[in-house]
Length: 303
Image (tube, rainbow, N blue to C red; front, top):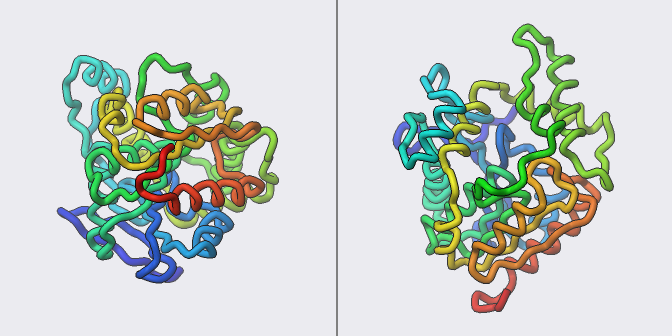
């Protein structure tokens, strides 16, 4: 495997990749819970490059080749949720704000003054916080299959939540782990645009061989829970915003996309029929076209 560049900031290593010409408009891609930068489909990345964008993607903390907080003590899920509801700050190794600041620091590291910030799921939450915390660095925001943290939104479909919260046995071999994650991706994926089983297993195997840290996923999930309701912060976002959501998303329900768009001033909502909680190959062209058009719109364009 070719060594990838790493940014070190305050003792934290963030692994990243920059593709395309340094002078092209930059698009920063932020992945979701437990997902590495390689989870961005090649067709999606190549589509943006073909449209003249510089593509920057990274491994968030606790995933891939970035810093992992092995052995860090954390409160349980229930305690984290209750403390957040009471306005208290649970003792976590990092927050979504820290992850958003990692993204802003990476732009500085690369000499990028402004970037079009694109995130999916948890990555969408981080992207929202980049726009809220670092407005001058955010040329535009695209939040995909994400949420505002509104506690009154409809919960995930039961089978999707069960698969997300389940883990392979500790003594599971590679084949069993790959099969588990293929089932997860199949459960939360797009019903009208199914990904072939062989491709699901290939993706899972590639990620597993690069890095595997179930405890890191738990810590990322706690960071999501501790971020609480972000609607007040979303209302301060000034960047042009596109919210994309699948109408068949079983994990982050469609109402979450509508709620996100309602709470970001001037945001435009794009609902895609038959799309679940993934980026299927059949939709990559459509997604790239929508994001490229959004990025290319004049800064003062109406939503």
